[in-house]
Length: 459
Image 1 (cartoon, helix red, strand yellow):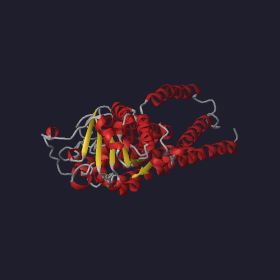
Image 2: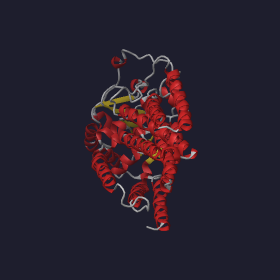
Image 3: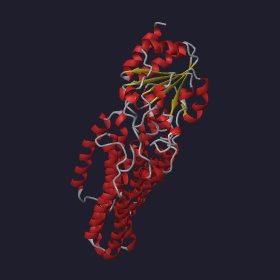
Image 4: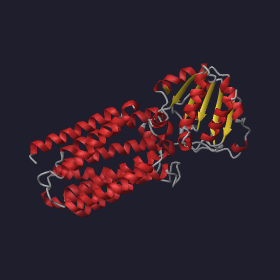
């Protein structure tokens, strides 16, 4: 293939990536954006086979690797539950960073002393950031999957160990540039892997999605740097787009959580210990039946539904849509209050509700719905906890303090659908559960909503 045609097709793939990001910015166009991104990735993958210096080289190895990726990736993507999507994103992101680091190491070993200073520096950057992204993403996966504690993991002198490890990474980086040897590069990779683990361990469960986005940006920068090492323009374009979009998303998520990125990453070292209440589960609460909830909803004029991770776990989005349609048919004003990080990742709830064909007009962002809570008769909270927890405003030092929340406490009545009195993902108690105007309906969200819908039809 001629260089001109090769570059032209590569440009087409790059345009697909840009249009994909544009499409993913809104629920209405997200599906088209995802398909455009997949098309661009497909074009980029096939194009590699026609690069003049690659034609016919290691063909079986490449096809075998692609086949292995398809065998692993397709079933994983098809079978994963929506609730586990953040974990899948973390794993895929980590694999991308690790792959870029490995490619840079192999290319460095091939070039040896013939590598220019710029290529060596780009290689060092790729190895550091790629390895940090890989090991850090594994820890975020373990936290989200609750295979390890979701609480911040800190230990005496932890900040100094992290600082010392970072200093070691920087020192060995200089060794690689000065000595041009494989051994220091492998030592650098090992130290970077250790730093990635130490980097993520102090992050609490509620902040893990922010770190996933940050590591995604790291992976993008790694890919862009490896593109420079390999002289692959398409890798530079794709990596830069991922790095830029990941950085923007990280900033937006940090703002949605009401904290700085530095506080997210290292706040656990300065946070005050939280004193839990041993008698919390024994405190009196007002629980109700599906009939009680149906009566409250039936005589309301305005209802705001606040979906959370529990709704996603129960796959109750279609039942929620049925309930909302029933209330609307009775002349009741219904809206959905969507927190920016509801469901652990931005857009999670929007996608879930779109599956049930919930009208976009009923979805209200936090800034839009909060002023309406004083005029709301019933706030129906389904599986959400941290995003409505008043501790974010009243308890300095708690993991979510400073995070903007949905002001459901200002509604006339509050109904919580919960499985148990267990705290939310941040691991802190929600005082709103014990408020006199709060009614709790215990059980699986889908089963509880089905009973409420049935009772409502009989009124």
